[in-house]
Image (cartoon, rainbow, N blue to C red; front, side, top):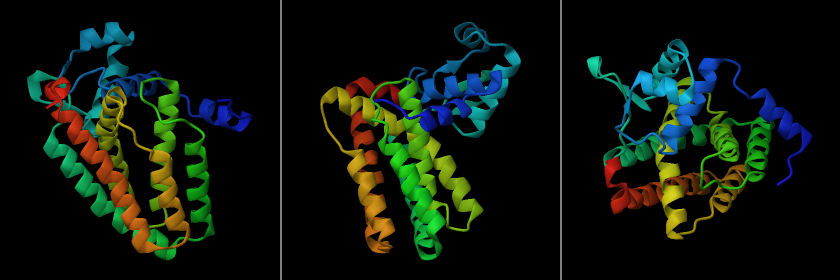
Length: 240
């Protein structure tokens, strides 16, 4: 798909500006896409060779990932990729729904035209990129735009804590969203995220609170159910 000049400029301005930021993004992408498998040790010497990076930016990136709970750190054992299991998938989804439904409700109540514009603009930008089923530059663009859209929905809630927690939980949920995407694509199971997003936008712009909350709940629960199915399959037993 051909990108416009403004879209190319946006991606260029979003490029990493430091070595630490670049290695953080590479590690994060490899963790989310399962290249670095859940539970795997993250040994400094191996990572330095694999990613051709120095120890200082590597440790800075790992510490940042640990603060996001995508990586765990345990004393002398060092860093490991955070595990994925059924309980965490369910817990994260349920907690997201508590936080985001409250934030969305408030945004619908008090959001102005500027808020509606953010919702429409981020949704349009997301719709310009196909849903990814494999790692790569286009997948990273989709992921950033997907997050921007969901955060725009909540952006008028007037709660810094709800925004902060929603942002944190979104990053956690990306791992099992991608697990679900890759696994179901391989199995031939289909889903239409674009339609689900459109249903949320339509309900929100209509200021229909009940329909908006129902659409958001359905969107997240389908992801949760398909992620649990992926984890239950033999090929994914090692993730638990």
